[in-house]
Length: 328
Image 1 (tube, helix red, strand yellow):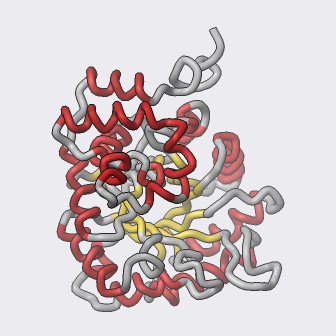
Image 2 (spheres, helix red, strand yellow):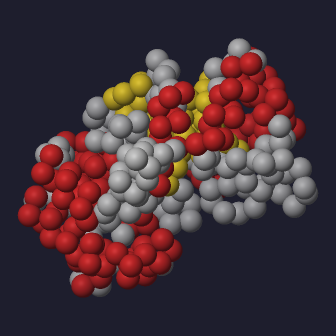
């Protein structure tokens, strides 16, 4: 496994981040434990979750599973850079969601309890709040950092200008601010290249792409469908976009076959080659999926292959950041 710094911090994280959204709803607890143990064996030290994962209101099912795994000891907690998120609805009352200082602090306490740990290494805002002032958000985060309950703060699903807002507000308070941003980014969804990634690079914020396989669309979906194995290709993001990208996906799967790599490995390797990317989030439901994803770290794509991928899945406009992507 390769490691890199998380944004501008001195913290070292693996080039792949273990996403845990499937733990509970799709993968039972025993199998989730085995996948996390295997991830450590592979050198993956960066684990990501959220208080809403498990999708049972207020229960934090996935955090509880991770907490019971950590409680087994064996150095698990010391080895893991543990990330979770706050924002989503955790109860029926109006203040049990969002980014008010009240909710941030209470949600953090609840996540710590479920995770059975004293500290969250990376506490991420799961979405931007358009109604909460940054002064309030940073006051709450500063309190948690001062108490030792949070080490670093990150964001998810922000726009480029939100990163600028957040960092300029943090700078006025002499606070470190954001160190990472999770965003939808893959060969099919290249929008972040216009403004989000340039803003993140300017402020020293590491990019952590979620859905790197676009819901299974880039995992060999056509081959799997022909074999009757592509359950994910019939739902969600992959199903919505398959017909729009069918011709490109056909050519992509042929290219991967010619390279001798699984399509999922190529999609992850492409992200690992992109400027500003710290670690794509892999969300394995099975041990086989984890092992396949881990192999992507060893895949090197030459200039010819990268050019072909750009041809199959073009960047927006002329490519690169805005406004050059569309202006002279």
